[in-house]
Length: 310
Figure 1 (cartoon, rainbow, N blue to C red):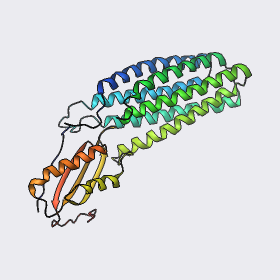
Figure 2: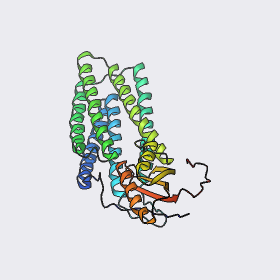
Figure 3: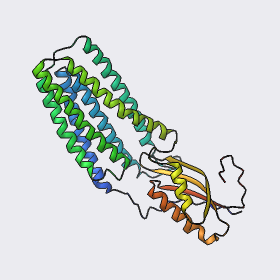
């Protein structure tokens, strides 16, 4: 029985490397724009005593954090590996997503607590200034989202940033509407209601972030990868009779790794093994798996491991 181990780092052809420089620039601009706005919005929220503005600022803050995470991911992906951290520091992006999600849940708790208190005793809010501040938010979120529009389909982090910003523009629009209504009707409870609504929006998006980051922290199969489809794709490569011991996990929020045993047909010559693995890796790259470690064995080799599927 022949065993042959092989690990790949052949990044000669990447099917989806976005122009990292343009993404990097977009991220830096996005972070600066949004940080300035978040500070202004928190300040205005406290000054005008508007819960809707404070909640919206909390939501925008989550954007800044997710943009910073993406920036961190791009930076860390380039850090050299060490003898202790053989994968480099890529996984810290997953850890950061987890922290981000937990912080957001705390923010939501604070907003809901305050909203309930406000419903009991509504306080006067100046609707006009609230609408103006949130209106500025629509502009900033839309401008930031457009920065990422071009590369949004190349990278999970960039797509996340884009969707987040686009959703935020809509949330700010809601705050604008509530500000205008308060200005003309004097329904001060609307401010607390809007604050609650924004909290719900943050909760829905955070829940996804939380479940994804917990899944990746536990080395689960990333949400955008279908394990059965991966196995089927490997099985389609000529010369492979079966595939087992398939493990897929995330190395970072953007890169995935796989290990698998390929059972070769008896008629596959030894010289064919490397080209065959190369074909498998190429297929896997199309499925967003950038690093694969493949072990090959012939069908005679008895497999006495519990998860053999042949």
